[in-house]
View 1 (cartoon, rainbow over the protein chains, first blue to last red):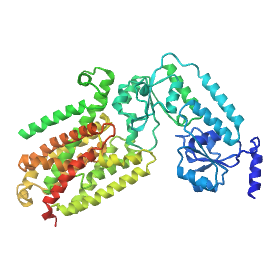
View 2 (view 1 turned 45 degrees about the horizontal axis):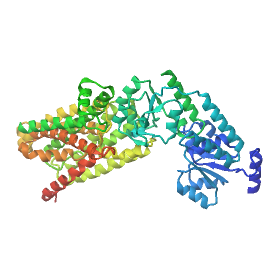
View 3 (view 1 turned 135 degrees about the horizontal axis):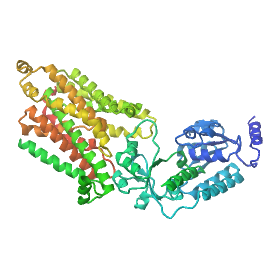
View 4 (view 1 turned 120 degrees about the horizontal axis):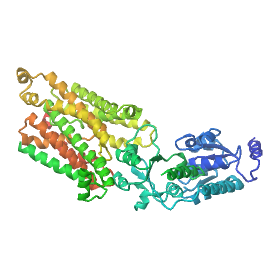
Length: 270
Length: 326
């Protein structure tokens, strides 16, 4: 019976090579997106519940076509997957448990630059047996990036400012998005290269040309109140404005190019 | 009079130090120029929008808490009475958290201080109901423990249920209090309620003085205990509610300050009210300076520092009054 089901799934998978997994479950927001972009129809069974959250996921509509999982070993095992996609920071107990149960789990590293994005797209293509599609996706990514045009001589400074006065440092995707869009990162320029909390006073003294704030979550928190602090409001009004990071900033996928494009647009109007 | 001058001088010095202290590393000349002349755009923003409101809030919150403690102790004639310890601040925090998480506070600016005031009001009335007009230490503290515990648990519940991923970790702020990254928005939210509270509580000077002679004597001198009680309840609710809404629950200020100043004013409640307001402001400013100097990058909570200073006082007071506790 089970053999029959997997044979049927193989038929649906079509172009995938014979070795390709047929029952794939993704439990990480970023692997969700890469898998949805690359998997053959019917190959991917389920994506994480975060893929359904419009604040974090740029692929909410696509996600609706898949089952939702909450990253629990039990529910994932019940889906009888032949491949589970996870991030390196996914719950190690869940990953360990699934592996002990004999499920193949592939973990993807965090992307901290555009090369990391390319590498993860190719890796996803490999594990899904969709190497050609992955190569096409990378080629498209490079073409789209090139089409955004060259950066100007002058790099205006942009401040990445998240809840609790957190900034991203230079080992982050957000930093690379800024650079790709022709901005300089205000904090790293000032020598604050490690991600972490920086006192608001010091951030204000940087006088950035653009303030890029983390997107507030529903409900309220003191951590997010600083995003709307009057000192920053003054900066935002006086300078060229403000913008939010959103779902397109979270994961290393081709969607980061939309974020880059929006920033390029802002820079050109400055 | 001498005490007042002394307290005022301390307060002014602490205020100046508070405005001059911060992680931005501005020089003394820069800070003064920025603050008074608005020279240097970034420095002016730092001074006028970040440091000045913080110092002003420190004064407002400290004065409110010191005054509330002195008034409550004067009325109950019990040195252990303090809004933070008996759950009034905790209940105010619960009120604040509820309106913040339901979105009411964002829809209407008055909702936040009013809800905190409501929480504080409910707690004071409940305490007075349980402890009785005399406010015996045992019932006062036992009722306070129960109300504190309940308010703390409910605050934690509300924050845990919030859809906001940061909210749950902010239990610490609501229970321990902090002035970091506050702004003039918070000053304007709290100020009207605090002014009402100050006026109400300071008006209690003479009645509280007379009450030290006993309730019967006070009645013959035209002091209506009921009215005094009502004014005190409203005043404390307004002061503690507004302070907690913007700075979280900061305990022990209303305990330590009147206790330290009492010997200097000859145990006259009316003099103690003024002195405790000034002393409370100085104490919170000093504590807020200390948290910035001890661990500048970690947002050490004010309540932690106040508890380290205040708890020994509290234990000492319990030891002194233990005969009465039986």
